[in-house]
Each structure stands twice: as structure tokens, then as C-alpha cells.
Image (cartoon, rainbow, N blue to C red; front, top):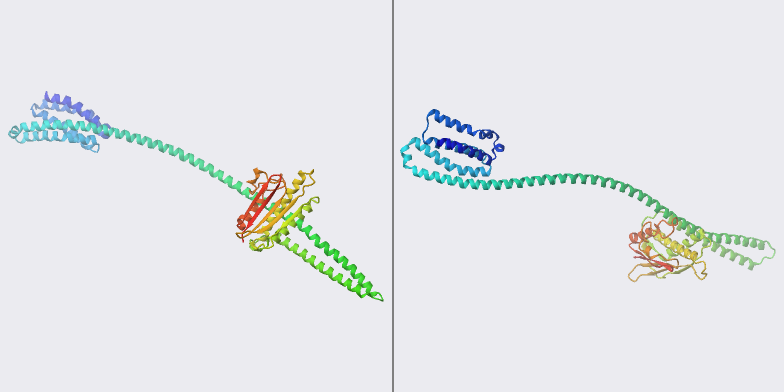
Length: 456
């Protein structure tokens, strides 16, 4: 009956240990054996009855058999910490029980002598097993908590990976979109650059057209003088021939005629050189700038381009008139500059000044006392370099436009009358090309003054 009782209580203990270590997942092959452990117990009991083994040690052998089975299973899953702890709790009990059975089989008398010692050892082993069972249970809870944490971490990792995959897809789509937009912007920028180059070329051609008109008007004066003096010289030659053919020649008159001829030839030569100088200036202006800086007289440059700008406007508008004031410093030093480029800047400033005074005249037709005036002054700066001021008493520049006056494509002129590149190009030529400065002072309705400062 003792064996039957042990079989009855061993079955739930073995199954409980199987659930404790989750044997179905860790040892699937042993799961079936554990589920049918009762068959082994029944077979053991029936075998004892058939063989007539009703010895008192039969129950101890069955306990040792159950302990061996449990230890074998726990040893297979010893990597699992709770199983390892429970294994350490079962080993002492199995050792004492096995030692008792072995000593009983070898020397029963010796076992009787140490019976109390074995009983105490087995009692201690049972207490040891109980303590380690509680420790194993604590370890299982801790392992379960760690497993839950790992599962939670793995779930969070999968969630983050899923979010990262979504974000990567969004980034890829956004990158593709940005790349496409960048290509579109690059194409648009290229189109704008081409348009800008065309507008700049148009501005240069407009400037050249104004200069050409001024040159044509300016060159007409010396050519008129050459023609007039040539005609007068022809008349003097006719008079000289007539006087030489008279029987009584007037030597004093002949001398006077020859003197007049000499003066006319001198004036023809002077105005011929003047015309040639104007032609050279036109060629220099039309020739592409080499960017080479040479010693430049700003007084001469300003005077020449002022007259060219004025006559260019007069050639287009015969009714336009303006008073020109110049105050050139006589001791102005030469500066290293690209003459055609600085001349283009001056031409633009003069043209704008004439435009401003013309517009004010159109706005004030009932004020006959208004005199359109453009003033140009030069002076040497105390710290070195030179200064050129171009002032007009025209319409002035509105406050809202002053901060943008040097920006490309910004213009205060009506549509069709300006590209907005003249002052922008002038600003770049002075500041970037010559390390100088271009600024303005203006008062709306009273006039504007542009100030150029160039280093030596």
C-alpha cells in the first residue's frame, strides 16, 4: 500500500514539475512520457504484486526511480535557471536515498547502524528540496518577468522597425519628390539665367544705343566745322587766285587771305582730331572689356560721358533741355580702373538723371521756374581714392524703393521703359569689379544724388 500511495502522489508531482519547466516546449519528446507517467507507476505496482516483492525497500526504490527520472529531465534543460535550481534541490535527496539502498543491498547490518544518520540526512535533504523549490519558483517568476520584458522589447523593436520601414519609405518618396523638384528648379534656374543673360545683353545694347546716339550728335559738330571751314577756305582760294591775276596785285590782301587759309586749316585739323577722338571712344566702348585696369582720369571720363549721354537723349527727344553743372577737382589723382566699365556706370547714372529731370518737367508743366539740372562733381578723398557725385533735381526715389534700387530686375520706371539691370550692373562693376562703393541720397520730389567712391 505504501508503494501505491507513493505512485498516487508521484504522478501529480511529476506532471507539476513538467508544467514548471514547460516540458512540452523545451522537451517535446519527453512530454508524451510525462503525460503517461501513471502507466509506469501502475506497471511497477503490478510487477511487485506478480513477483511478490512486498519488501519495505520497494517504496524507497520507486522514490529513487522517480527522483532519477526527474533529475534526468532537469539535467536536459539545465540551461533554464529554475530547472537548474530545482536540480540542485533534488540531488541531495537522490544521493541519500540511493546511498541507503546501495548500503542495504551490500551490508544491511551497517545500514542498521547508520539508520538514524540516514534518516536525518534524508530529512535535511527534504528541507533542502523544499527551500530550493521556493528558490526555483522565485527564479521562474523572475525568468517569466524577464521573458515578458524580452517579448515586450522584441515587440517594441518590431514596432520601431515597422515605423522605420514606413519612415524610410516616406523618406524615399520625399527624396524622390525633392529630387524631381530640384531638377525642375534647376531647369527653371537655367531658363532664368538664359533670360537674365538676354536682358543684360538688351541693357548693354540699350546703353550702346544711347551712347551711339550721343556720339552721332557729338561727332556732327566737328564734322560741321570741318565742312564749313573747308567751304570758306575754298572761297578764300578763289579770291586769292583772282587777286593774283590782276595787273596790280594787293600784297597785303594776299597775305591776309593766306593767313585766313592757314587759320582755317588749323581749325580743320583740330576738329578732325576731335572727330577721330570721338570715333576712338566709340570703338573702345563697343569693344568687349578686357578687365585690364589702367590709370584713368575720372574728370575726363565723366565729362566725355556726360556730354554723350546728354546728346544721346537730345537725339531721341529734340524738346529735351537740361542745365549741366560740372565741378571737377583740378588735382584729382589718376586711379587704376577699367575705363569702359566705369564709363558704362557713369553713362547709366547720367541717363537716369536726365530721365528723372525729364519726368519732373512733364509732371510740372505749369511751373516755368523749374530748370532741369544735372550736376557732376569729383574730389579726392582724404583717406585716398576719388569720389564722383551725380546729382539731379528730378523726381527722387520713393522710400519703399530705396532698399531695392540695386537689386536685379527692380526698376522704378514704367513697364517697357527699363529692365531693372542698369543700376544692378553698375553696382557690381563698382563694388565687385573695383572694390569701391555705390550709394545714393534721395528725397522724393526733390532729387537724387548717386555717390561713387573708388580706391587708388
